[in-house]
Length: 407
Figure 1: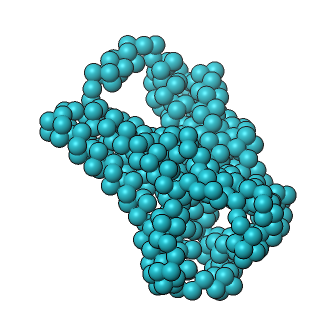
Figure 2: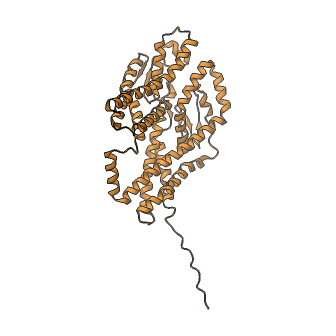
Figure 3: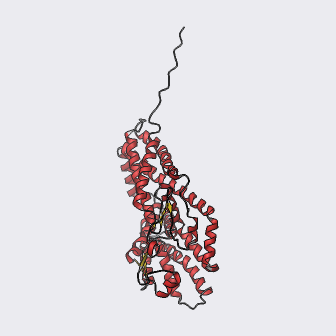
């Protein structure tokens, strides 16, 4: 395609990505506007709500200030005090990032790939800025600078991931520089990156399994909470859609639980393998899957990240040994394990930051894991597991030589 056609198609695709993201909550809210409210409320209210949901889904902080009637209906205290909602419905962000990956892979085949990516990214940023202007009111005030920055960062991350492997002069020069550099250092850095990110990915997969099992075991309590809300059919659909958008955040909570520190659902609460203290919870059905007691395994759950790091260390060890001309890693292995632990701790701490925030007024201002604590625990566990994996073949036991036969 020509430059103009590439730019035009990229802008249209970015428009569709943002439009579909807003249309998902808007379609449900519009049906409620027609069927449940009988067209008696201005539709613009539902448009603003859909935009706010999309912005919150990308990590944008939104400040709410409820009037007396709404606060009384919701049972919220402190009517005149504004409160912050910063807990991301990260399912929206995940979909935006995946859309960026798909778009970048499609643009690999185009001669003007960089132009298409820049136009698409600019379109997302501009649309986000326009959307936040339409959603801002006296009672609902999204952060404008975050609305300009965060959706673009999420989409740009997807573009960066999807463009990996694309051939361009900059990447060719970088690969040549890497090939000509000191191989032990390059091999150690590559092994650390793979081991660190591989450990985090394995823990996230295990956390997904734990989340699924928790929902299966707590199915009865989840249904009971659905019945207690009495939201009706349309309200139940809207509530389910919101909870589906929260699933990636719940997986991050489960990962923090596996790492050890756990997470909070309100100030003063703790959900971890060794201690569980829950106070009053909001009437969100999925929270019925939360454990009411500590894990019977206790600290044994920490074997998951340690084992993941051990397997990752074993997986990257052959490449490191090859760069050392067949010598056992030893000090190189310890250095690589330390760097992998830094990468894993930083990545898991960032995920914990994404999965934490404020979900409402009062005690709900503190929800999710503590990023610093989760990152430190992940660092220690990865350091132990990766060191064992990288050094597992470094010590060889001498085999006894067969005795010579005497005549």
